[in-house]
Length: 67
Image (tube, rainbow, N blue to C red; front, side):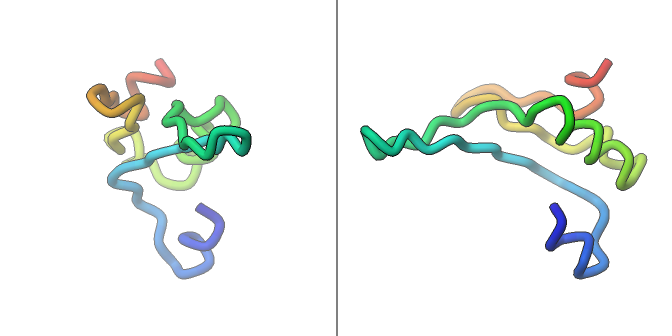
């Protein structure tokens, strides 16, 4: 997100957060932490509509996760 803002971009369409398990080499999709959610919200009010990938099949908007 910092690189995005440095480039003058503020609106987010979709976010996928991942955590790598270095022991198995697998990537796990997980929702962004509360600090990241708040940061996305503060960057642009339109980000409430950003799609957040919760796993391979489920998504919610940032607004749904915050409220």
